Length: 257
Image (tube, rainbow, N blue to C red):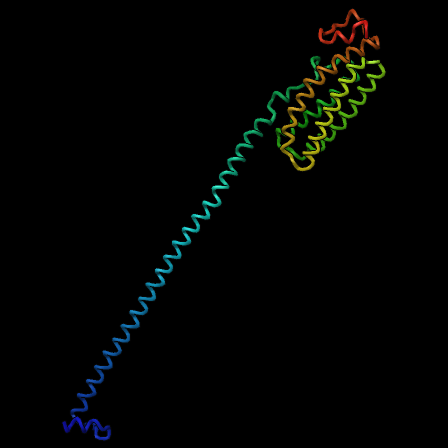
């Protein structure tokens, strides 16, 4: 007790005292245990922080994966619908693209009216139409605009020439009016086709092929051939007995006309 009391006062401590070494060793052991405890706490805190950040990273990764998946669904569903529509439109457009049957059109006797002035203009129109068909087949859309404009001008000039001839040869009023109404209808449709294409609606030019086909097969044969026959009879280019008049056109050549 006396010894402890002596060491309670620092002035009484002496380095050569045996008890000093014992106390010094005890203090060192206590400090070592305290250091290990603090070190373990720091390590535990670091491990806890690492685990926490790893968990945060894992949650973030899962959230990113979910967001990427949702974004993919949000994008791919409308895109799939758009691609389906594009595919459907492409199929429809391919059906409109002319085949070899269009390129085989030539101006022969089945289309010719037999009157040179009419046939020259019609032959030029068919040549221009075939150039448009060739551009579409080769996807040369740049030249179609100028070609359709040229067709429009050629059709206008040809129809004006036809209508002047109708007055010159005194074509019957009823047939003349029907023929001129057909001219108006065809020119209106051709104007719409050209306007749509010039405004950037290039797909419209594919739909114009049916119009060109109708133009060639219907107008030239149904309207211009009987008109050409009438002109030749009116101008006396051949004798009436040499004229083979189709039954549907005989009204034009009846004595009452």
